[in-house]
Image 1: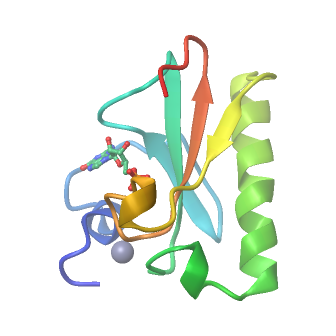
Image 2: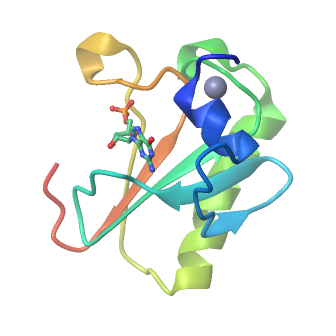
Length: 106
Ligand code: 5GP
Ligand code: ZN
């Protein structure tokens, strides 16, 4: 989507480094980390939030991506968070899964 910050990151507009990527999603560091490691798993498809996603394959692949990237980085203990909707704290309306590990301030 034209004005979506995560779509811009996906397009490479800011040169953001991807710590992991596969056919379904990219993973990059949160700009304002709330833990020693704070990553965002972002689907390549623009979907506003979990409420708008019914694709079972993509839903599964996003969790598999969490497992793949944490395994790759040797992270065994972590918290995953999905904020859905403004009142729940969602600020970027392109679905993403937070991965937090170590000194979590959330
Ligand atoms: P939400 O509150 O929507 O669940 O989470 C959005 C997250 O995206 C926040 O933790 C925020 O720090 C992060 N974020 C917002 N803009 C950018 C950006 O331009 N680059 C990166 N790496 N993270 C961002
Ligand atoms: Zn987007």
